[in-house]
Image (tube, rainbow, N blue to C red; front, top):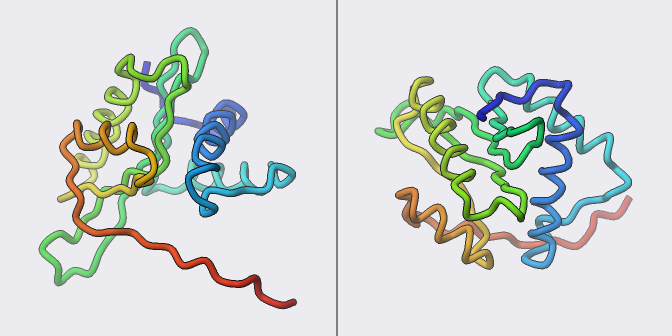
Amino acid sequence: MIQIAEPDDIDDVFELWRELLDYHQPLHRVFAYYPEQEQALKAELLYRMKDKDTRIFGFVQDDEWQGLLIASMRKATPGLKLAHKGYVAETVVKEKYRGSGVGKVLFEAAKKWLIDHGADHLELQVAINNPTGVRFWEAQGFKVSTQHMVLELAPRKK
């Protein structure tokens, strides 16, 4: 059921990652991407697969990737009490499997890996215009601690 993504899985991982981005397109421009830049986007995912502090967890059944969650360890300032951040990044479950428990299984696998690798707390970001996502993460025990804000700037002149 849970599988760690390898480079050979790039097409399945990319399909799910793009579904996540497409779902978020109407929520904010920060999720916008260039479809014609597929190779660059896949290169980013491959980079994460090879990063020793990152894992891409897949929920795979009958050779179908039903969901994925990207998790990584990030060190904070050593002087802070919470200096070993487990970061839960992009998380997506195919629409037809949402509400079936796939997301919870993915999170539990990622949480175990992060704890095993020294995390003393977990953090994530969820779009405020995604109430389903907010409810899911609250059900996993997450609470709002800060407000992530974005200021879109004018394009740079070349």
